[in-house]
Figure 1 (cartoon, rainbow, N blue to C red):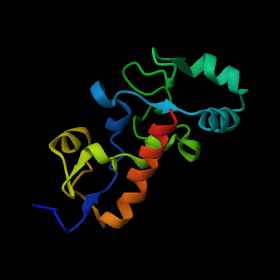
Figure 2 (tube, one colour; figure 1 turned 120 degrees about the vertical axis):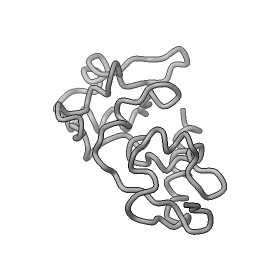
Figure 3 (cartoon, rainbow, N blue to C red; figure 1 turned 180 degrees about the vertical axis):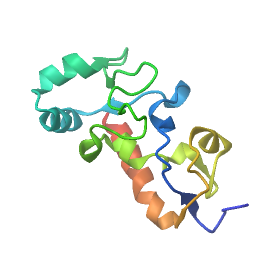
Length: 141
């Protein structure tokens, strides 16, 4: 079913796959504000949070430690332990520009997330602010 011109269907199925996928999408970047917000939520000082849950990559960007899954993914693999303060990257997924092409989900998006193509129909005007937020965040890093 083509979604061009109609918008994008998406419904989170709480499968946790977005928190376990690897490859190009196996990274969660944090800015200083997100570090502070998550640390406060967990009752930690920012430096304690950084030591326990993050590392600096080769470019100097702060990343959440991921092995098989995000350290904040609950044991049920369906809940985020920091959901109210989750990073922008997580809040905007899967509405990222590189997962949408010509107004439709890419095959890569469909492979990453079982909720793609299901549920609520989001008009492209609703999706655009999410894509712009991610682009702005990438510019800040």
